[in-house]
Image (cartoon, rainbow, N blue to C red):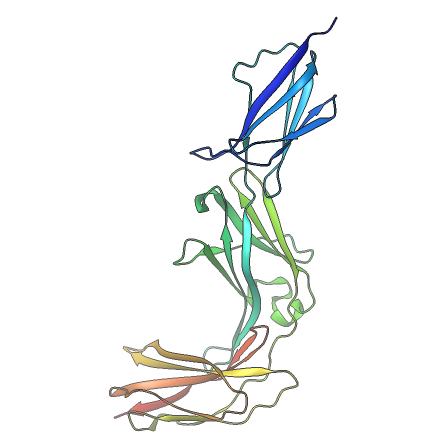
Length: 292
């Protein structure tokens, strides 16, 4: 004769305050029965015979749990499952950046940014990194000023082949791991193109003296893809350039831009950039000028 038992318990989130999980599926083997939790995370199986059992808890967005209960185990208060929520991705972007410059040599970068979250709390995120093709290297993201925002900038000399153009078509994944070891993949991503022809500033340039409110002019730019221009202005203070102005999303047919404010006396340079719809960027060489 085998005793008929009741098996009950609760399913809770793993982090304090251990909130109950509603509508979590709970399975019991070998009876092959299942039920769902109520608003308090409670579940109940009736008509369960004595002996060893396996319980499985499953809910989308959480790591499934499996618990083996030996025969004739006494579980006062029932079973408790503490479920780990999987981390989440939002707003992932990957793009190339080529900076044409007089000195030192031009540089290129692979840039990536994302918003990440975890229902168990942002501090539950343990690791965010990027992988490229068959390369075994892991490129780790860094936190930004926002607690849920992370960025990555890789110099092309640190990339496979040491040339960003070689990444076009390569499969790129982003990995997000939490403190419980749950890892989520985002991808595959691919670079569509690397821009290699920089726009050309026309004036002011070569330390030309200008009015406090200069008009920046550049040559027309032709490409087989849609793009916009962007302008950056830098003030050189004690030999160190500091960007003081940035404007993006200027129309592709535009070839000049009137600076909206008055600049104080000093030495400056400006650049014009081309950005495609995938956010790939190429920036011109520096065009210097002086405001007397």
